[in-house]
Length: 490
Image (tube, rainbow, N blue to C red; front, side, top):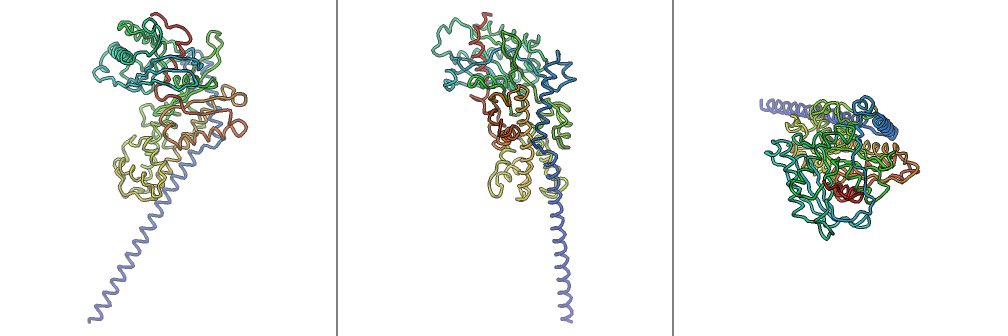
């Protein structure tokens, strides 16, 4: 009897072991299948995001066509049917030549923040000196007021800054009126009267913008501040001014930050103004050759501006992290990459910023430690496997490479429009945190330009970081305008 019990127990144990082994085998098989499915999703995504040189040239050629169509149309309404670019001709009629010297002031507006700057320029062979910055946020109660109340606040803060940072060692400073550079970095808060001034109309001399500058200058005069606002322009034009100050071959500037834009110079037929300064508004550029995926379609449909900003949604810092999040969400749903339950925080739109994405992408540790930390910190994923972390980094790489290479194609398109690829050296300045701090993005952008131009012409186009940092373009614009002619008396 005892032997029978022992035999039965042994048989039962063996059956349990076999069953457990079968479960483990099934679990391993399921895990392998899920991992295979995850890799297939990523492989397909990479294929759809592909940017071979041939496609980059198609994008660049389309950009040139849109630039020409927009410039040829007399109004923004007509150009909208022919081109996705606004191509706004700025009322900045003079860029620096590098000979400007003196002490200058500038203002940069971003969101609801005002950045005031002043500095001394000593010529292109000397660095900026005596640079002072001061940032002020526009309070909510001011934002809730009228446009005139907001304008009065801005002007009062300008006067306070000038009073706190007087011109150093300048002759007749008390007598002359100084030009004030004023740039805008979008997005600008919708409550501000500046929102519709610089980017809604094809002609820079529209009555809305001229009226606002008149209001600013009137308020400055009422305060007794010897300042004159001569233009309201996109900060990208300020970047172009900075590039031109240090190099006369500087013909274009690109902003690659949370948002994106491009500005460049076009020869003018006006003898009094040898070149036009144009803000392209290239974030709205659209082409059938852009490598769009289902994730891009979803991002666009769920955005605040569906159907608009197609190029911007592919290359700017505001959207790169969101594309990565949407891919990771699909992987979580279909392959349980982060566990049997989809992490709730992974379902929150725009939870992944481009700086955090860059930190994960540029993690060189053997076990992708930074990736694991960011997944836990941002999405609450605290038990990610090494394989999962490697796949996350791969998704970041795909999105980054596509965005950077498309931005590079845009740069080449501008140089082609100017007919300078084969004939002349061209310098393009790039500003913005995406370019400055995201090393891999920057490297991909440079390599795309080199690959497109080939060894024969790649040395003709130099892409470099902007001079002076955020907002300093306003100073260079003020210097150029002051050097061009004396400031008006009213």
